Image (cartoon, rainbow, N blue to C red; front, side, top):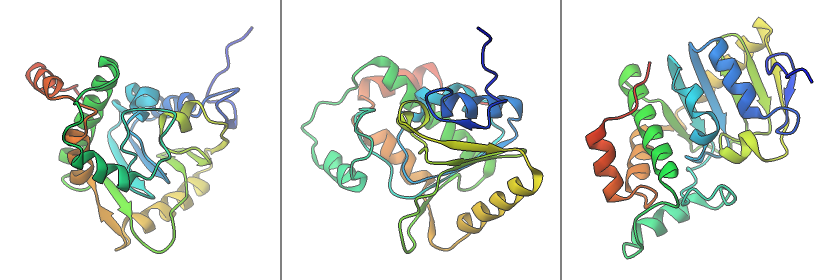
Length: 224
């Protein structure tokens, strides 16, 4: 049976082709930049496309709500995050730690990725929409292609849920969606969120004190 070329199919659905596989292929084809708008975000996204993301030259993420603070439970990423954030900070008696070391490494790599791109951009790389209405859009915008559909920027959205994301390479279509994204990114209701997201990732019990020390001493993952 001939292997499916992820760039040839016009859609990804996590059945015939995962959204993550198509996004990774698009990034490797042209790693210049990626803009993402997603209703939800969860750090477990690194397990789905982290390797490809590490090749990017530029990255921006616009989140429709606060990020999903869970213990990397990939089946429970749609909970009310702001409530979870407050609860996690309050519950100081809960033991620090992760389900597995792989989970810890994924969070550490995500933090390193965000910090790298923040330095490279000398500004925000993550913003949070605080305007009227819930920003429910999902799009993956590269220099020469765009994917639009139902998949959030989470492990489940990119690899597990029953999703549908259509992909286009038309220059005019890509340009129109890029203009739409830039409009929201530059809107006064899109609040800077890079520092806060990194802070939350660092203080959540997803990364134990012991692992923080070991990852700091061993150095962060190299970005392009």
